View 1: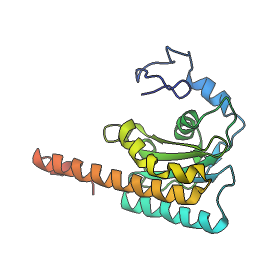
View 2: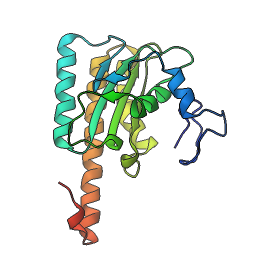
View 3: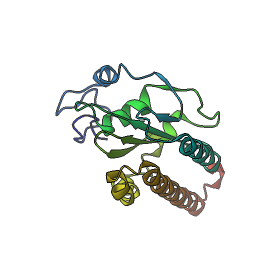
View 4: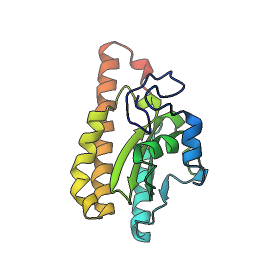
Length: 192
């Protein structure tokens, strides 16, 4: 696990970061002005057109149908200089209540894609149940193809590439998990 503010590695059980002394309450204070009730698509920076938002909502719905216990949340923000996409992603993962979270979704199985329109940066945050399957390196590979589009402020095109990469990555990890369970004769643990 990494600190959401200084991005240094920290132990999962640590109450605060040993490098910068950040704790969860400081993260809540940093985003205190942000809404606490959100939708899975939160276009806080207003970077998507209405037609694009409808398409993104369809992508989110399709993702929930394809991976019933997981969910995809997409956020755009215009963060200040003291905020960053990593800390926003951790905040979005843990603090807000999502009014349109599917009933089958497990809160700790969310994938959060955050785009900061101010710095043109992007980050993926994910719940604890996905940690055995997703890594910083695999998430970087998902985000890298979208870099030129982000620089040109072509956010919808960038998002389309990133969304496709996330689905492809999770599908591959799901196949790997099923294969591993079958190989160990634990097929009774496969949910779908």
